[in-house]
Length: 319
Image (tube, rainbow, N blue to C red; front, side):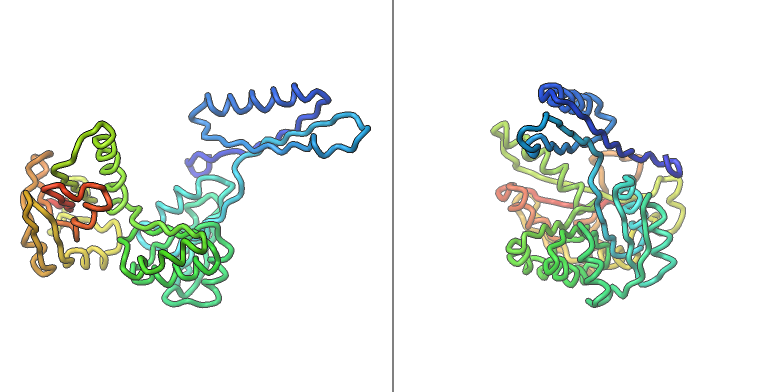
């Protein structure tokens, strides 16, 4: 372990034998061990040079069993959620995590959470040679920048054929890059945070299970909230900023649309906070309220439930 965080080891094993069956048996046994020991989370690669031996020479087989391949992750931004991302993606010593920020001290504070982290200073507000170089050198880019900057980053990723991940809602500007990303063979994955993100996964798990058994979804409601523990909700807002404070404020002013019992309901952003309702379906002792979260209706098609009478996505807060 490093700083209390478990890290994987790397093993290279070379096996020599004139008996091909014995070599194949070694590979099979190692692979079986990897499958049996779930906690190992191991992977194996083997390289076989038996087919390359010169004719007339005795057989000499070689098998190398390796750990994880080297990976290079680029994190753009050093805000509140960046440290957790760097720690999680940087647990393996085979992964280099570069953290880019306009401020060196912030990048260094985040990078130190990874086993092999490094800090890079870069103006991320616009495209430039430094950003292009960072994207070119990475295997995958995780953009934690404000959502309006994602299209600029995506264009660089498409140019250098580097995959991109964001936690932001998919904007029209990002949707416009869909065809060019497909043509370049680049994966651009949006909406993979808490919400949007984990809520999508839990929703589709249930929906696919119902559809797989021949059922139909007639009403869908999904609520989610990043809340402090009740004893830590000790300020007038009853809320703690776990992500961009500006993002939280902007989200509280978004327009919202949903369908309830067949009726479409639209809420202006200026009225969003006033539209809250008590959340009485669970955890009543927590005294929660729920706000509609953006446009729920677009997920009717994406989730495969366009005919559901109720389609609602909401955000939980303390009252």
